Image 1 (tube, helix red, strand yellow):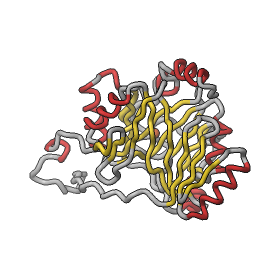
Image 2 (spheres, helix red, strand yellow):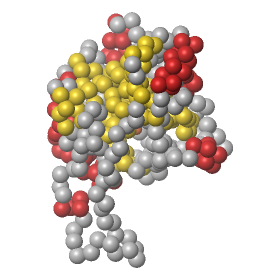
Image 3 (tube, rainbow, N blue to C red):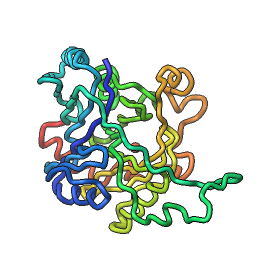
Image 4 (tube, protein in one colour):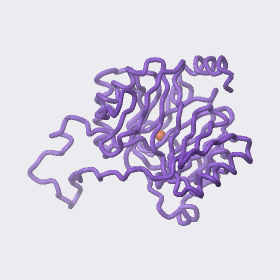
Length: 318
Ligand SMILES: [Fe+2]
């Protein structure tokens, strides 16, 4: 039984056209009136209207039709109703309330970025020409949605659901399992569940070509809206990715990232690298190896989190 891909996400926000247009300006493509794509993947972010900002759908893939039957049985075991229609399974996340849709298939492969020439000591590769980032002032377009981070007071219950019911593979855990980094692809994480004051979307992450693209993309967002900055640029410890966190017009935090750890040998990762308690004897894995050492308050406690909690309560969601 194996999930094998994060295909796309759906965001619900009070003013969808603002967020839709924001990503068009970042270089995403308009696949339909509410669906944003990238060059390789025509469906990456669907933006719907909703009473408060939240993740409303997580769309994933699995290897075989037999996986759908296995998943249905596991979901039934934990009291989550699932329906299977053809090669599609649908259910509702028991903590957050978003739709989970799983199709038999796999993410469409990405065309590798154009190789950039970086000089180094004793390594003169880019000669008698300026750097690509200097010549190409327009940020390269985003390539895909790579992961989402969800926060909730019920973080243990939620992580248990994704790991033990849906079969996500754990890459690392921090603070006695309070934070669970997990994957369905080779990325160090396609999903992170962490504690939060209510159940909300902490951020979604968009992969760009490289560190220059992270810098150029973030700079372009700030040129439009200087108050969109949250934290960056830096390189995370867990996942090793270069990051820059900003906010979209709906107030969702998102991350431009590049160069994440790719785990292609699960057994080797588990044997050599995986840690299930990063606050152990070797010390905690901090927020970054370079760049800002600690995230700001808004990173873990966004200014609208009380509004989100109230909106969820009004809808009968925990
Ligand atoms: Fe992230």
